[in-house]
Amino acid sequence: MVGTLPKYLNALGMDARIMIPYHSVIKQKYGDRVEYLFSFYVSMGWRSKFVGVNKLELDGVCIWLIENDEYFGGPIYLPDREGEQYAFFTRAVLESLFRLDFIPDVIHCNDWHTGMLPLLLKTQYIDTALGGAKTILTIHNIAYQGLCKFDFVQDYLGVPDGCLGLMERYGMASFLKAGCVMADRVNTVSPSYAQEMCTWEYGEGLDGVLRLRGDASGIVNGIDRSVWDPATDPRIPANFSRADMGGKAACKAALMEETGLEVRLDRPLIGMVTRLAEQKGLELVMGAMDQLLWDNDCAFVLLGNGNKKYENWLRGLEQRHPGRACAWIGYDDDLSHHIYAGCDFFLMPSRFEPCGISQLIAMAYGTLPIVRETGGLRDTVRPYNQYTGEGTGFTFSRMDAPDMADAVRRALAAYPDPAVMDGLITQAMAVDYSCDNWAYEYGQLYLSML
Image (tube, one colour):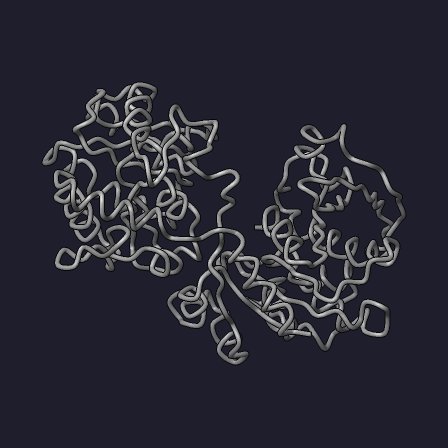
């Protein structure tokens, strides 16, 4: 989101700039294009920490990179020191803006990592040039809240005693709760998830704060069609479009061959590209996929990594169904494009899903989603209506394997009917989740804050 949205905001006439940590992986990829601007030291309690400010331009967007090798020179996340990493980053951002002579009207914070910024702005910077800036906090996943000890936030960030109660969670200080309380606006990445966050079931203990605010809103993410467009995508074996779907069969054949599946174009192919985590509904896959493959003439391919329990089970699935199941453990960007382009159906049985990008990409590539009705999945996938022919995919509601399996069987039952499939694919590919609309909605939100 942070990498894509500013380009489209700028096309609307705004001046959107990015500030992110200068992680070593960025340095390795873009180091020769980065311009050093200046450096200074910032106080973190009694400590003095180096801040380097660098500039990178990508797609016409100014990206300021905050450098400090202690915090960002190694792994992206430092075990047991993530709070320290982002306490430093927050302070460095605020102090850098003065030196950059750029005073924004709106500071857009994302997730717990920058949740402390609205609190610091309204307590320690209120009488500075930055004091008039409005803040918006976007919650991408409310389950991650940035919990630290109270003495840490007092020591590192000088949080006043009177603010500690505002950020208390489980007897600790929560960066995310601080943002939920102090930001001028709170939003998330789909209207349904905005509602779900305000409930006990999905709010992760912050539902009361969000209900009290009463202004949490949701804007569905967009996809960058300069990257995700089957008509122009250079990473797929054959290009195709809504007007000419000829290349999709070639993509399916190439994907089956690449992943060791039996090349059968008449056999429906179900794909997943996912983190192997409980959130993503892997328990349902474990509970249903063997039976689905035994009972139906279909094939399954998954790309992802994560929890070893799921990785090992998926390897076993591949062995139990040779030529019809492939578990590609790891991540391969090219293969992800091949799966979106080559599959007939795309499975997302998520326990919760703030927005989800994969179902949007799948629809753009004429691959029909099979999703659980939660969060952004409910907002973006219209269930197939067998009586009217309307819909862009197949959905189920309960968090259990039989309900997911029923949705998969409905999709497989539709597969032999070209009229049904062509209609659904045409409708799915016609859905416009482009970044232009996405940026316009955020632009309207920013303007409403001023």
